[in-house]
Picture 1 (tube, rainbow over the protein chains, first blue to last red):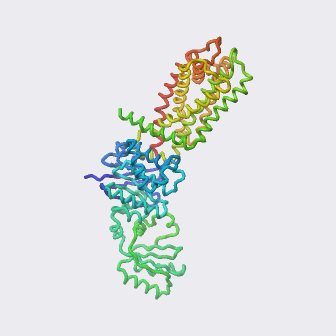
Picture 2 (cartoon, helix red, strand yellow):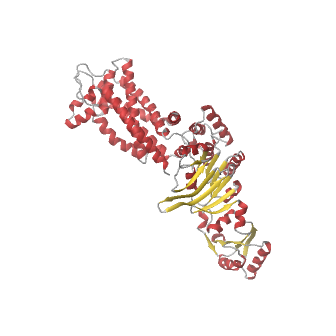
Length: 324
Length: 268
């Protein structure tokens, strides 16, 4: 059976900027694909094309078996979309918002009302249901928006950075809701900037940067792709950072990563504890004082760093540099 | 066939949403209703004493003009409402839904009939207070109100297109005044067209607002007996001429507005 969501060679250009540069993807029915990448990687552009909101310059895509370019209405009937910015009407109540969306999915009146109440309950919005959305918090709006995407129980769901900007509790709540959905057989394409989110929710993770796939696999495969463990050393004195980096280079199997303001050096190694011991001895012999040390399994953040040379969250990249 | 049915069903959902919003922000309705009251009172008392209508009362003459002017002004609301919708997050939800592409615009023009109806009621009441009377029968009076609402509905479609072209609510208001002021003033709304100089007179005679005003005055019986019949075919057949405009405006501006909506929402 063909994948529920399938795209080949998607290209989208905005004047000089290439937002998508030949992206392929496939999501099998009832699975989750997480598209992981930093701001500007092309995640939202990809979602917009797959949900028919935007036309690709090149390439083809089908969703639920319908071509997104030729049959946008058929595609829209089969999908729910929850975007990065809550698409809700501020002056309507939560209930009125959902009922309206349900009716526009062509649900009957009683069904739209019943389902709206059900979702408000499920997303913990019952108390606020009959208040205008204007007074809702960011997390409440996001939950309402997600409820809007779910109201017609579409078999395919697109969530574009569903938890960006949410507090940890709201994020955890949303994760539970998303997992429930997929347990019921929904096919989900999710974009995120958070490694943790992709790892937590998705069977299949695609890392993209500058509109292109740079890695693809499940969390374990991605970790294997970039080697073994990481030794993380924090040196006590800023003056020692460069010297320590040079000393540790002999143990590194890939690029070292230095966080200047915390004086933290991350060294990819293979060989585990004995290598850590050797590394510490080398630092000790050279008289480099360290304040912290650790050995850890690589995270998806390391995957991203290794593959692209920069971290996933833009804010971190300013203070960081990569050395070989 | 089912496509058309869905178009109306979806428009009804949007219209219902707009009406709920009127209730949520009653201040807007209040201001919409205060301006016609102000117009009636201003013209009745400020100009009413200075302008003479041979054989009749200026106030009675005036009300038909105010009715016509106010429903045209009211159409600005449609443009402003749509311009606002386009800027709000909810439009992203609409874009992702399998709804009819005409629904947002059709729903908006439909819900603004509510505003116009409320405005007419308030104006009629204010008019009655300052001495205006319906001197015909209920049938004619209902026809007059019906014609005003129909014309308002048609004009809403013009402003819908304006609202979808200009970038913000403020611009809608300013842009519409450029059109609406000459249209409503170079007409028989406040003064008989006979008094206007040549080219303006010609414009006023063929101006649909003049015909609407004339039709309303005739249907309410506000034209004093013995007034010579007006010059020009439009003013001699004001109801028919107004209806022609209604049909022409809707036929042109409804497809244009819907196409414009699709164009605006298609890009991202």
